[in-house]
Image 1 (cartoon, rainbow, N blue to C red):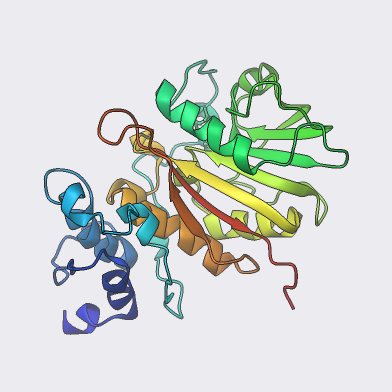
Image 2: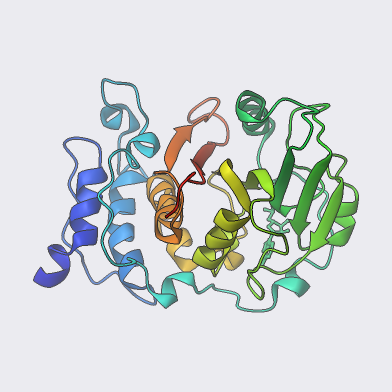
Length: 292
Ligand SMILES: C[S@@+](CC[C@H](N)C(=O)[O-])C[C@H]1O[C@@H](n2cnc3c(N)ncnc32)[C@H](O)[C@@H]1O
C-alpha cells in the first residue's frame, strides 16, 4: 500500500484536486480494475456525486469548476498511468452488433445540446471558409453543429450507416469500428477540427486513436472531446464506469498528453444549469505547430 500511496499518479491527482481536498489512501477497491482505475476511483469517491463531495465547497474563489481545475498545471506521471484492464468493458461483445440498429435519439438533454452548439459556434472556423475540413468521430444522425453551418468537407465516422446517412451536416461518412481498427483513413494534416460527442468513453484503444487524430489534424487544428455523465454503461471502458466527471476530464486530458504532439489539454465546463440538466464538459487541445 505504501508504494501505491506515494505513487506519482496519486501525488499528481492530489495536486489536481481543488484546494483542501486530499485523496484517501488506496483501499482494496481494485476488483477487476487496473492500477489507474483504482486510484482514479479513490478520487471519484470524493469528487463525484452521492453527497460525498460538496460542489459548493469545492468551487474555489476564482470560479472554476472542479472539472476545469483538474487540468490546470498538470504534472503528468512519466509513465502511462493506465493498465490494459482499465480499457476492458462489461460487454466485450462486438460493437458492430451493438450498433447494428439505428438509434434516432439524442443522448443528452436539450440544454446540454444547446450549450455544446453554442460552444462550437464560438470556436469553429466561420461557416463556408474555403479549404476548411471537419471530422466528427463517433458520429450518428446528429453532430450538434451550429444551425446552417457548412464547409466543403465535413466527414462523419461512426458505427451505423443509417444514422450517418441521415446526418444533414455531413458531406461524407465512413462506418468503421475504431476498437477494431483505430487507424483513421485520411492523409496527414487533413482536418481543421475533430469533434467527438459523448463517446470518448467507448474507445478501448484511445491512445492509438488520439495519435491518429494528431496525425490527421492540420498544425494548430483543434480536437474537441465532449462528454456528459450518461453512457451505455456496458460498453464504456471500466476506468470510466468506475469514476466520475472530474476523473473523466483527467482521463481524456491524459489521452492527449500521452498521445503526444498536442498542446496541453484544457477543460471547459459548459454545463448549462448545474444540477438541473445534464452536465456538459469539453476537453480540447490543438495539434502543436512544431512537433520536432
Ligand atoms: C452515445 S452515441 C453518441 C453519438 C453522437 N456522437 C451523438 O452525440 O449523438 C455513441 C456513438 O459512439 C460511436 N461508437 C461507439 N463505439 C464505437 C467504435 N467501436 N468505433 C467507432 N465508433 C463507435 C457510435 O457510432 C455511437 O453512435
